[in-house]
Amino acid sequence: EYGNAILSRWPIVETQNIDLSISGRKKRSVLHARIRIHDDDASTRTLHAFCLHLGLSGSERDIQMARFLDSHPFARLHHETPIIVAGDFNDDPEHSQALAEALQTGAFHGAAEVIAHREGRDPEPTHMRAGQQPSRIDQVYVNNVALAALRDVQVLRGEDFPGHCPVQVDCDWAQVNQTYRAGRQPKPLPSRPPPAGQEAPAQQERADDSIMSALHREASTEWARAMQLRGAGNWRRK
Image (cartoon, rainbow, N blue to C red; front, top):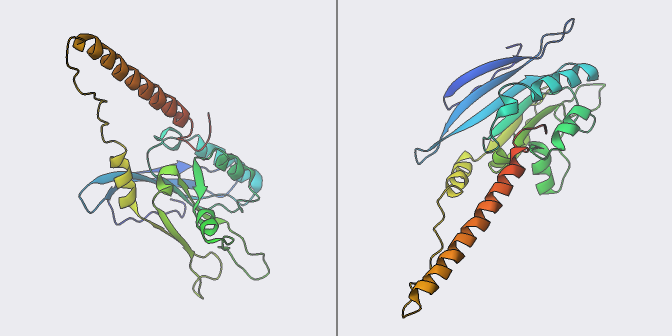
């Protein structure tokens, strides 16, 4: 749609085109694909991929980013769903106010920046043309869940790429699936050895009270964590 495309070796079960066009300007959109990732052990996980191409002017991009961040389904995706947003943003992340505000939520990360930081270097430029300064207008962003799968980012160079260079991002989705399953294993209830003797009923009652207190503390902790993550699931805080 408007030059955007998503190819996948896994099944694409749903697609949607989010129109970002502004009257009098070139047609722009975000292409969304819901992909079912199959692991080696036959488990599956849903990945949401968004491919976009933003406008040439800063004011146009700000409007388009705002529309995208508030669009369905992006704004309502669960915080435990892996999400990738990639494309030609036509702006360096260092110079884009819209991108800076989005990244300040801490829910999304620039893949190139993460790998460069790990390796102690600066991110490579992705767009080079004669007479122009090299820039990083082609970007890939991952949310916190997809970040766990991120392994490497490479900018491919060659004579076949005189302007925009392909950005190759390597992810290990099996690791995300394993982490997801491990986090959902039921926790065993706290247990105490059965008391003996004449004081058994009183000791059992105290043991029961201790177990209930432990469960209450754990439930309170999990609830507080859920409330904290509720606002971090989306790119923009509501």
